[in-house]
Length: 248
Image 1 (cartoon, rainbow, N blue to C red):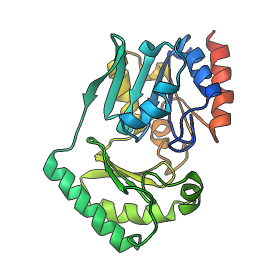
Image 2 (image 1 turned 90 degrees about the vertical axis):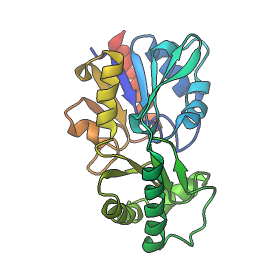
Image 3 (image 1 turned 45 degrees about the vertical axis):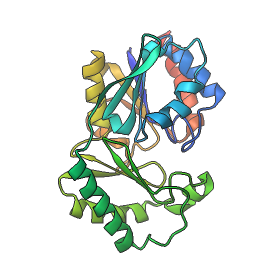
Image 4 (image 1 turned 120 degrees about the vertical axis):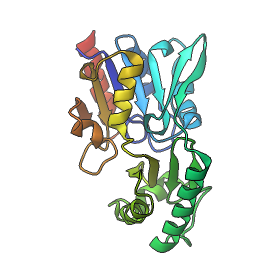
């Protein structure tokens, strides 16, 4: 019997950058009645707040919820009726500047400098710097069509790994690359979650839409932890219903 159920966000609980729907919010509230829940993704706290936290029904057991932005390098908990940051591993300023310079050079070398974008392409999330190919505010249809076979981001990834050999550069979301300290991935996030919660990783289950070689959720499976691969939000809802039935 699992004690904690962890989820990826975009493509698993919600469409990219979209608020979770009411049916999903209700299911998560029901799940929080029988288990602890964590949400782990590359976005920063404001994205989680908009997509997940404010969408939950009032009765949801927020005290059982772990919010883990920037691939688990930050943790937020609901304490004394407010969300508080428990920890955040941020880049020092000189390392951040080096990353930004490497990103600028890689965009030019990969031939993406003149593409149409919506909003900022690079977001400094403190403990993670994220490149979004079409910008942070790109429409969903454009994002889905931009790099469906990962070829564009893999080309950027090669350039950035050469320029930033001491850091991790991973494909995330539908158009993004996430740059973090070395060995920061969702397996790291699950281990850090175990330390923070006191729940063994053997008592956790992770659900994500990118549990396949090269996918940004696959590190959890590769680390030997229990996972369920889902195709989309509807598939996740089916899995959550089954999990709730098993845990009750």
